[in-house]
Length: 230
Image 1: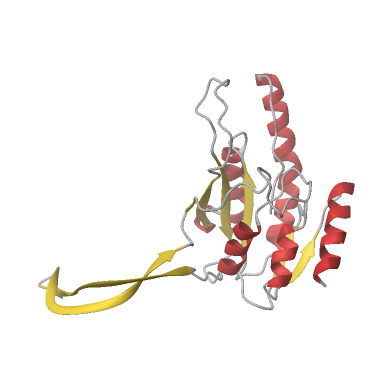
Image 2 (image 1 turned 180 degrees about the vertical axis):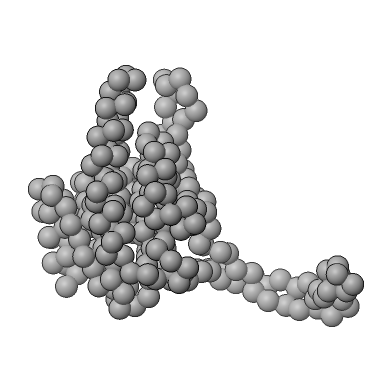
């Protein structure tokens, strides 16, 4: 689900790096699309160096109509850098694609304990108007929204989650995505497994998990992490 980040120093290096990333990823994404169930979702995470290229290429594979939008992951705990001649990047983007209209999606809400009292509304001659009757309900926060701003970057600070893998994702971030796009007993696959955060969350949520990676560090961290769960 995660794609490694790229650091570029010059325009030429930028073009080479982006071309390498796209050429490397596209055959793999095509195969992910091939094995994805009709009710499944595909998420891919990238930064501003190449996310626009990924959208164009993924549209070709999944179809424009199967692009369900993106998640802006606002990492509020990033340390500002004033040395670069650009607006400091505080977010990454997670693209969401599906294979058909029958895809699984479970809205996630959080109770606040705060009660709200307001007048009931009804439709009158094509207009929505208030009535004299009141209703009372508990205020809820919708967590499955396009901007996620309540989950920090786990690699910054002294988080207990840190494994030493440079592109590690937060358990809370993956928990939200997996709950939204799968049900218990479903299969979750991460073909760029990294530190196996996706695997840990999937197993704890009673999903089955397939993880792939060719990195030695990734395999070492993932093996130990899975051992501690099962």
